Amino acid sequence: MDQNFLKQACWNSMNKYVGIQTNDGQSHDGFIAHVDENYVTLAIPTNEVLTGKPTENSANRQFGFHPGFFPRRRFFFRRFPFPFVTSLFLLPFFI
Image (cartoon, rainbow, N blue to C red; front, side):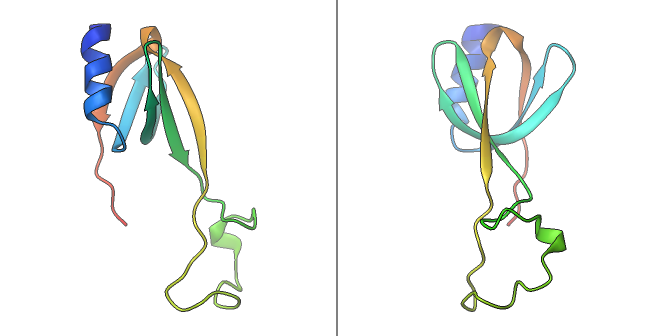
């Protein structure tokens, strides 16, 4: 894929949930957080909440939170250089 076309596609997909495939065969999904001349940065969601515990192991989530309020999920940021990105594709995001 042409790097200029890939940069333009990343700019057009800013803040959207996308998947990226690298030239070594790995796939990563997340929100495009930043695009510059050499890199695209993904915000990749994790299963950890503000307490640092995984959400599936938290048995007391009904205590300490207001109704309708849940702790926010954490994201970690990962930068990918454009020469190593082979494809970019949109993914559906459900809340």
